[in-house]
Amino acid sequence: MKKQIGIILVLSLLMSVFAGLSETVYTAGIYEGVGEGFGGDVKLTVEIDDSKIIAIEIVEHSETAGISDAAFEELPAKIIEAQSVELDAVAGATMSSNAILEAVEKALYSAKGEEAPEKAEKELNLVSVSDIEPAPGDAAVAFVKGMENTILNYDASAAQPTREEIELMLYAAIKAPSGHNMQKYHITVITDYDVQMELALTPEVRPQKGTVLFIYCTPEGETPRSVDIGISYGYLNAMAQAFGYGTHIYTQPAFMLRDTGDFAKYGVPEGYEPNQFILVGKSDTVDATSAATNYDRKPVYSFLGE
Image (cartoon, rainbow, N blue to C red; front, side, top):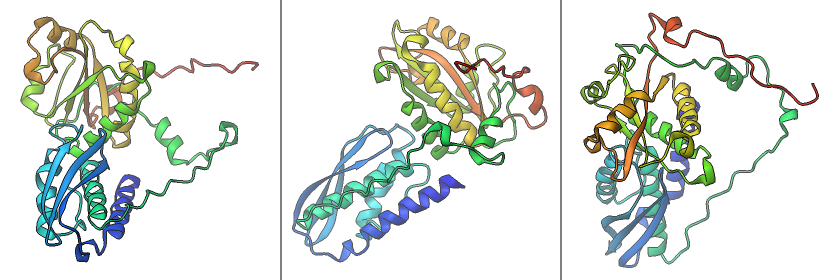
């Protein structure tokens, strides 16, 4: 619910900023614009003639292939057809869509000979950890306490995570801190059930039609520890559970695929090799108790002086 409200607020803000731009007189020419996307900056050009948008060309972006494709294929044409940026984001590619809208907005401001307004920075309310006294029903506390352990069985009848949910899981994963913040990994996403079954190389890997397989790929010769995959996976897992999904991390089948040397067909980039599999999906509702690791988490921590 909070995610939906946030998306609505962002779109409302964009629409209020863009309102009336289509009625403005622009100087003919080609103008550049940059918007902030999921994977970095989205750079594009907007061609204006007779105060009309006649072409939009994507120059450069680092968005996730497959997830963001719909935004780049559909949104520029819709903007040209409507002669307006008062459009909804493409379903499943909200961040990429907003980046395109932002970049077009900036290009249109340039066509008017004006500077695009700066984004308002959020005012942070910084508090000490000691100041936080969460109530028993606090949503964040309830979420953390309710997080499941590793999922072993997935619901065969559950729907697969949406493209937007997958994109946000990836966004969380790449936000995770790592050694020197190098991010020496690549994550390949496999949504096709038949391909997931091809990669079920051990009996423990049990995909369903509602699961998604993430392959963490690392540079040849690197280890999961040296790349800090565990930290990234932790962030991905937290976001997945925020959407009501469970996860399981597998090492052996990833190494088995690596040892075959035949993994390029599964989207592993050149110079990389598979290192970990992450299966994401709904926990088996019939066997929810045994679906998770069958031991309680121990309080393996202490406070100095206590």
